[in-house]
Length: 320
Length: 257
Image (cartoon, rainbow over all chains, first blue to last red):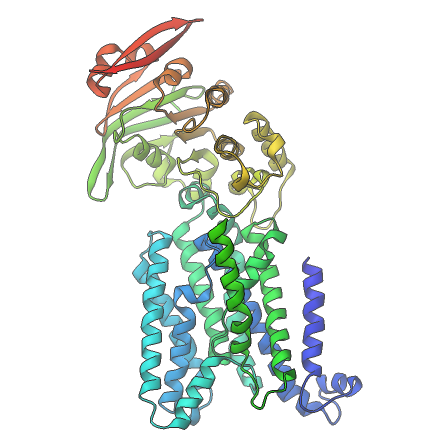
């Protein structure tokens, strides 16, 4: 399955590189990838960062969704439930609001990451060291609602329509017109956070028998909880900081793959990362192909596809 | 000879309330001990302390080692614990659940070793769940699931096995089967502590019965010497019929008193 997903991701990435407003024949595209020929700057400065970010954002969302579902033993968990997404979004909105992003572009992602980090510290402190998963979810919901409220306040107090639309569009999520710098800021944190999440696999397997049994099997449940929240904060914080909020990937992807992984939380992690990447790259190709007057935002498309799926999932859970 | 499990004046406080008081208990290797007592006597809390999943005051030694000083991985290879809670998240297959009992024995990056596979096979055979290997546990009956989870604890291959109400919600056939499995594990050299509500099973299968009441250890010893009419009246407030059959004692709770 991993080989199949990797091949599909490679194909999707190549298709993404080949998609754009300027048609590029394959030989020029390949040459451009290596900085050669007329298409070099276009491919290296525009299409490659866009594709790499779509891969990174999708992988991060899929992976952290799978890890959180395993940690909370709940198929409806996703990065949003621990307050990370909303807080990273708030950080970035504040950078836009106070004009820091205009004065110094790196302020936008850095502020988003600071928001995610602060949220993780707050959630873990609120949930307590030895406390159970319910208090973690409650803390996440509390932090998330506060971040959403502050974001609404920033939008409310926007000095002019231009600032308002800038913040709003940013929140809708997109990997359009991102620079190589954005990739450079986000990638190390995504990789570090992703590694922390992947390392928790066995603990997540043990947790499927409950916190008590997991503890009796030698799993330090408090530490595992902190590692998953911190890994999510690093990876998803970085993703939201460069791409805005892109919903439902972290929810839908692990759910789709679970039966194919014999329902084992550890076996679900890597495939969810790959499939999340495929989904976001594919959605990002879609937004460029759909002929609308204004390009659709990535987060809008994933939510449009994801929300009905979420409803169907709830419907099935309710009946089952 | 030092007992495999030595509980020395252990107290457990839960939410500010003392639930276990100065309880002491010794369980040698090869001994199946039934921990009995009315609801709220502190049996589960004492069991959690022995399993290392609840905080306690006092001394607990397993195999001569201080439980408090044992790193979590070492403790997990020494003490296997089957809690009352039998929920399993996701639709894990029965064999995958049993295999989780091998986690403490796995190296950081390694997969299942031959020893792991042997222990899993042995545990599933002992608990009579080999035929369920590929079935998702969320589709099993309560009794089948209880036996799969027992196999999970057996696969841990620990010197001390502590189980909380292993026969709850099982039909008589499977109650007897589970008790036979626990007895066989003890006869094979493990120390087993089982919280039981069924006094008949305790009297029939246990080598030793430990009776708790209101957080204190009231008595511990051979079943017939602990489950006396006077003790049952005082602790449980019941009268019971008792006798022997095939050389083993039996008890039947009959009426309140």
